[in-house]
Image (tube, rainbow, N blue to C red; front, side, top):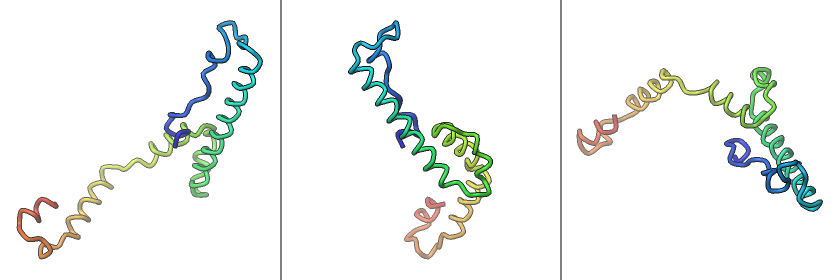
Length: 112
C-alpha cells in the first residue's frame, strides 16, 4: 500500500547531493542510485499488481496509466459508489431485518 497511497517516496536527493548537483562523496552517490532503482522497481511491482486485478474488459481503459498512484486514484474515481448504490444497500438491509429477532421496537427501529 505504500506505493499506492504515496506514503513511500523516492529518495531525498538533497541528502546525497549538494545544491550544485554534485554528490557529497561517491559512496553516497551509489546509495542514492540504489535507492532510486529500488523505489522504481517497487513502484512498477505495485503498478503491475493493481493492473492484474483489472478485468480484461476494462484493461484498455487504464492502459495509459504508468504510475501506481495515478492508476489507483483513477480506479477509485471510476468505480466510486454512487448514491443509488448506497440507497440500494440500505433498502436491502431494511428488507432483511426481521422484527421477531429483536427484543423491542426501539431496538428494531435503531437498526433501520
